[in-house]
Image (tube, rainbow, N blue to C red; front, side, top):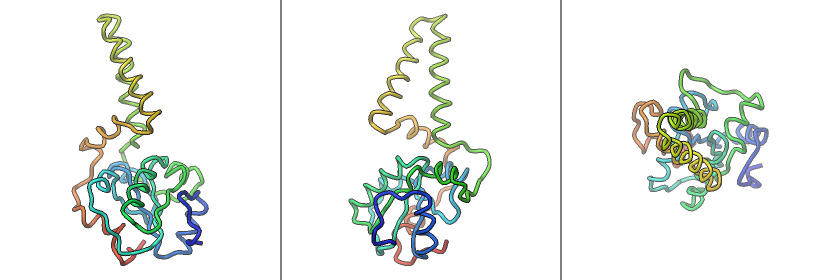
Length: 194
């Protein structure tokens, strides 16, 4: 099965891979806060920002399935890992959202919102503030326009500056772990126990 692993796998194929390949690695590239709120049991959190900064070198050729909320950040991680020469990275199509919709097991924490929900809250609040504030101060309408332009650029470029800023907030971080420990789940020769 792993010889034909493509750049993306759907939920059923990912589950079959994890059952048939004991050395397969499930790497969640979302923020630590998002991971703490909900993640696939047996997955390891190696945030995308850490992957961007790390000098990656893998000592294995195990299959690696990358997970994020919807697949966008995981695709960014796949590109980074492929460029670094890491074995066979693939992306879970639809991310943890698809995994959850298919009824696959999800370990849930408490209190933290997914990044997409946080972005919608902040963007919506800023637009509402701009529109309501423009009744008193007409120039406030530009705040709503700025956010609208940012959301349009975000959709066209498939990036999200607001999500990157929100990921820096203490709310989206868990107690610090050292980078080598986090990266070991991805790069170490010995397959971690799931």
